[in-house]
Length: 343
Image (tube, rainbow, N blue to C red; front, side):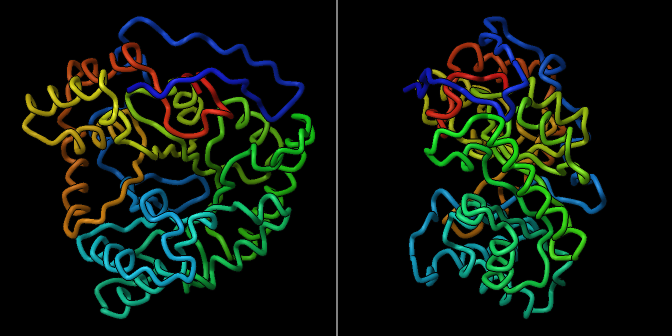
């Protein structure tokens, strides 16, 4: 079933007026949606300011969200360790997930095996409670302790609307708080605690405000993304600014009665699974993908999307891109973003 709703949307700045275009009814081409050249789907991101970020990340939220408040989730540790052993080199964490302790123990165990060094694994986290509390530095220090590392490869502000937290702040007030938090992140980069900084759940208008006042520009924006929510405006903005875009919830279309048959038919024709095809779609449009699995060995299969992305043709992409017209939908943050499918 569709997960579409209408709700008021907000931007970061009162001074910015952004007219949201209605969802397109035409079937967009891959070029119109900002699809990257085929070979680009298999490369790591070259982050602004230096460093590389692997395109496929193991997500430690959603399925794992606060499963064990004491940080003693043996299944999560086993799955993280399995993912690392099969070649995954990007761990996507967050303060709000309540899983960093287990991820840290798994990472420590993997590095102790001697097959890789700390610098071989890209470790990312995000600010949540510490962002709302106005103390991002404390959040980074807590994540470093929990993850058992000396630095983070990437640290994100989890969402701009967290800074309102139900208090009814104006857009101008929220923007000021975002910039204050960003200043803390810039200082953490200077101190070597964090290698790269970025955001999550930021729309184009939010990024325009941040980029307009940041000393260090955001290297990454992580948002919900899939053929039902392609966000072409946001993709184009990030590409133009050198901001690496990651998609979470990439498998959302498989729960939709309209989108699922389209994906399944395309996957059958291409001789692959619907899951791999959706991952490959993300890479083909120039994004990275955050996924997870509780099944040993499944993440090794997920890495195969890098090769599949390079093989997708324009007609393959057009077949999937039509889903944005047939059944536009988002899974998360409906209250905050409503039916803004453009980004």
